[in-house]
Amino acid sequence: SSRENPEHIDIHFEETGAINAVHLVAGGEMDLGIIRYQASQAGYFMKLIEQSGLESEVLGEFRMQLLMSEEHPLASEAEVQYHMLAGCTEIVHGDYPAPSLSFSQIRRGAGLEAPLKRITVYDRGRQYDLLRYVPGSFLWSAPVPQELLSRSRLVLKPCALADVKNLDVLIRPAGAELSEAAGEFVEKFRESVHNPANFPEPPAASA
Image 1 (spheres, rainbow, N blue to C red):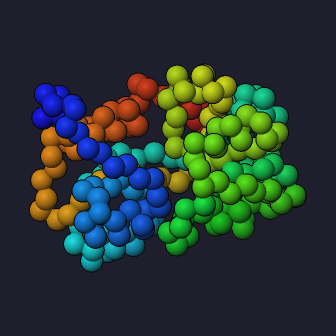
Image 2 (cartoon, rainbow, N blue to C red):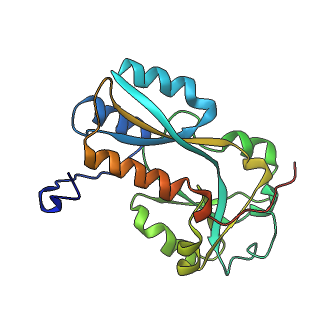
């Protein structure tokens, strides 16, 4: 038991892209993984997961929002229309992406008057620093706990054009039982990431 023998816990945690996570769990390098993808890609990932000899469980769903500094010029807006991001700097993760995982469909129809600038980040621990220190920067984010927003001086803003459902999904070898420690980790993840009580209630975005 992880509670009874904490000195014997040996955890290897790796942050990576969704496709690579599937390969790591399928190859036996990891006991489980939690992957995140758009609901429109469920067919692609379900097929990949099944072909890799894995099974899956949806842990929760969410819609992406804009994460930015309290000092961002758009931070006072109740809702950010996509065209308002013209000329802003988007921070993106440099993980190997799944097909069509970006907001390219949104961008094609949005008609930005000025192109977005972009900073690609591989060390996700630095992304909040960039949001604070790069003027006009933002990133597309899952919900963030209010405590962390306040501590980091960040705000979340809804964007009607980004009203895309995303899923967090547990993957593990088919038929495998989770250890007690792994089960506790999954429940802590579900409680901290998908408990509405931990997050600010976003304003309703207009259609």
